[in-house]
Image 1 (cartoon, rainbow, N blue to C red):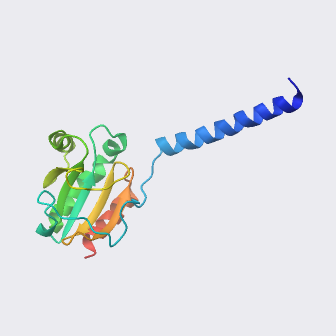
Image 2: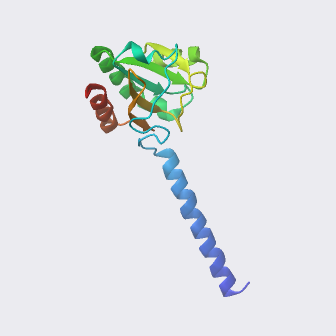
Image 3: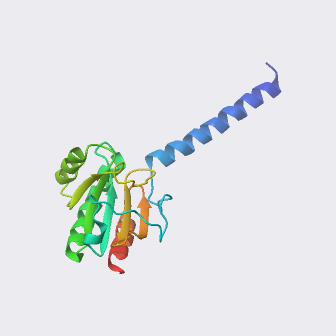
Amino acid sequence: MGRLEKASNVAILAMAVVVIGKFAVDAFHGTSKPAEPYAHGDKIKDTPDLKLAAAPLTLLMVTTSHCGYCTASMPYFEALTAAAGKAGTRVVAVTSEDPATNGQYLSEHKVGFDAVVSAKDNSIRYRGTPTVIVVDHDGKVQRAWTGKLSRDREAEILAAMTSN
C-alpha cells in the first residue's frame, strides 16, 4: 500500500470519527429548540378529546413512557403542570402509545393533566419527544418546543402560559 493510499485511508477514518462523534453528542445531549412542525400562529384543529375551547390556553405535552428525555424532563413537567393548574391553563398529554399507559407514566412522576389523548387520533404533528406546545382557545399556537427540558425552557414555557 502506497503512502498516498495510507494517508487517504487515515483521512477517511478521521472524518468518519468526527461525523459519528457529532451524531453521538447530539443524540445524548439533546437540547430544547422550537418545534419545526408548529410556528407561532399555526392552527391546531380542536377535537372532542383536546377541548381547546374549554380554557384560554392549553398546554399540550407530547411524551412516551419509553423516552429517556421525557423521563429526564419530568421535574419540569411537574412544575409546569402545577403552574398551569393555578393559571387556569388546561393540560393535555398527547402520546403515540396507549393513552392509559402514558397517563399511568405521568401519574407515577406526579405530573398532572386534564386528559391523555392519542396523537394520531387528534392529528398532532411532532418531530420527537418531549414536545411542548402552548395553544390558545382557538387552537392558535403561541409557542412550541421539542427536546429535553431545562430550567431556561421551563421559564420560557411559563412565560408563554402567562403572557396572554
